Length: 399
Image 1 (cartoon, rainbow, N blue to C red):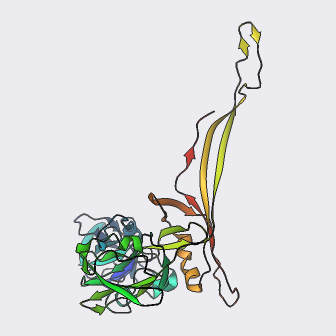
Image 2 (cartoon, rainbow, N blue to C red; image 1 turned 180 degrees about the horizontal axis):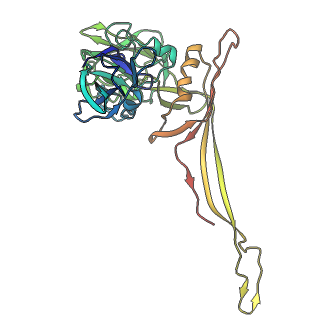
Image 3 (cartoon, rainbow, N blue to C red; image 1 turned 90 degrees about the horizontal axis):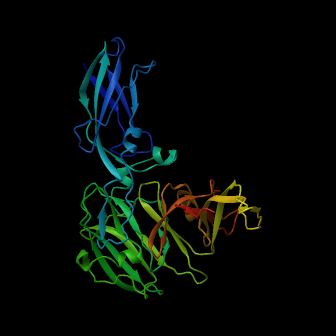
């Protein structure tokens, strides 16, 4: 008996895309032959699933896609707005797995004939172009100055002094020694530098990046500099990862901006790469409440002693069900083409939060179901208007 693994998923693969193995065997001529794939997750000795890939008629090889088994195990890791750590571990965004291959024929199963190495799945979902070109090691594993954070956001982001937010990143080498933060005033003069310690040990982590999150970091987690990191004198600041003073990630710039017209709204949303991004809507925001009512017909009791008494206050129609749902319309400031393209991830995101004075409020959905990709060559200026539906309904008393 001999099974060969001809091809495998990437060592670190996005779990909502195909994760396929290509198999061959020396026993495919046996009656009622099929491959057997046993999947073990996060070091468990118990099988998560057993699949039976069938032979391809064209070449007698087997193809098995395991991503649906794995995606059910992964969830998300929303940043902690109360954390005083500079970096935090995640526990739900990545898993490890092993697939053991066997075969079945003649009514007998022969398991565990060939065992693949340990691989990893990330809670990411890429469009086909990005998935075909996916290169975790060279693009996202923080190893050099060109390595990316787990976000498709522009290199410059706008934020407010009271905003929470994080940058998610991958580090399979576990050797990032600090995150380097430099703050500048409106003339571009350097105010100060800070080094954020990295006690987190998981492969996927997140670092505080927005002003309120940065200013929560305890001084014991700062290798250089003391709080506060962001003051009223700061106009913008930069963040990147380092290993012993050498830059190991792209640089993200955060421009501090407050709305002079009205209170802006900040949305924090799950992005395609499994991290959480944030975006501020600086222009108008309006709230609309829809009311759903259900009525029933009743017969009032008009008998009073020996008389029939009628009154306009008699209840003949009763409102027995009233539900209210709030929808908030948000409008952004003028967008770059890069921002406009990135915000498709917000519109399609399955997990969105609105930052409020009470914390993060869950949003059920963005109502819009389409997004037009725009170019400045055809539209000189454009912004984005969306409607968000809050994640709860309110109910009134019965009539």
